[in-house]
Image 1 (cartoon, rainbow, N blue to C red):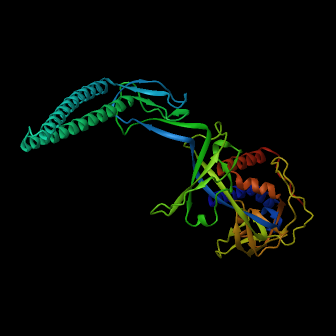
Image 2: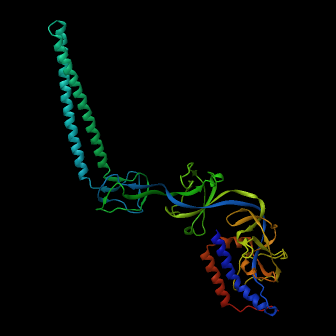
Image 3: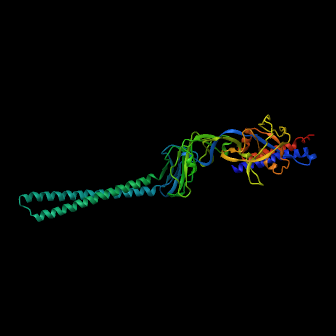
Length: 435
């Protein structure tokens, strides 16, 4: 904002240099130059409180897709800008090695299943022998030693069966793992949306650190802004925001703060807020930077002046404004200035510099103490008044809307407009001299 205001003052001063030259010719016989400035009337009211932040756009449900395995790429099914549905294949990796691993795992599973059947048969045989000996023991046809031996064999058979069963479970798990890796040779879209940032070609060797695509829903967007610890004291979810960008030209997008993270990042003591924006496919592009103005309330009633009127005096270092106390209230402010036929300037009018206290500051306007509502305040040409020994100037009354538009213009656009006006002035008729 400081750069914008500085540029506005400097460039507008260039514009009024032409008016100063006119005053030179008019006042030559007096031996002094009377500068020409623009002024606007101060207002009284509440100042909308805004916080300007920088935001980054991303698509709704934006996902970066990485490969989960390392393998050469055999085929890429999608290009940047293609629409996809959830589950659609994007890339096919070479799967020969993974299929072989699945076959080996399945063979190991069958071997262990056979071993478990064998262990189960041995377990059943040991249980049968022990049961027969117990029947014989009841008839006193078998000794206790024989029963103890068969019981030991049964315990060994049970352990072998449990071991074989565990090996079967392990083998089955390996089969599932290898089958899952085989599935990963086809990389699929996890969501419905549009693919972009393609970073893969057939024949490439990719690994788990390779981002191959980004997929997101371009119909809706999410804007992320950073909030400092102090901002959390007055910025809340649900507050209205205005989104602007150079790529949007003069258009703006109205939205609200959707979410604020309750956790501050260690080190920078800031957090993130998210703004959901609907139906922006043709306006916001994922990755672009935007300006976000958060409206969080209004100030107390005060005298309001444009920010460009606030001037730091280079000699005293005081912050204040130039007033025109005797400028007529019947003057009609101009909305537009035609360089080929500019509105007339006033007769020399007294100018004085007064200090002010800024009690609230918005994006284009400030609430101040030290100036009365209705006073005429210089907004353009303050630098021409520094050496004004006569403490007077010729004034062009400008409207509040015009000075607001000037403040909102980017420096480059403002400079081009001013230079065009200067060229038009030079190519037009010579200024007349007032008697």
